[in-house]
Length: 87
Image (cartoon, rainbow, N blue to C red; front, side, top):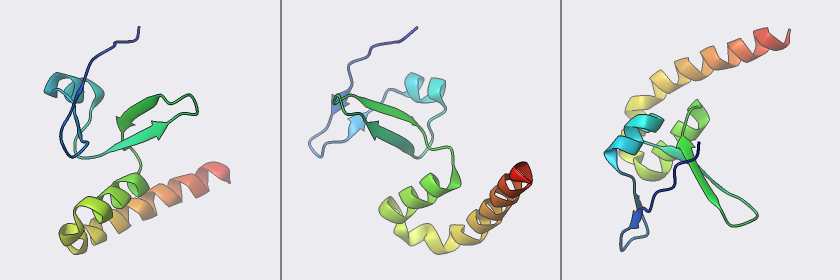
């Protein structure tokens, strides 16, 4: 069942997602937003490492150097899983 909610947009164009919705969807720091051809917008938690890294680079550049080693290890593990699943 779909849930329809009205969300606020602040003066900078940011959506304000209520806490209970963020918790229900598992949204933490970043999301993936998809704009469909019909103009609809869907938002879901950023689940892959590439989305998280892109979000970090865009919005939190100062912490990138600290997070790169951990992100690299996670990316290597994910790539290894992908390679094994196609073999």
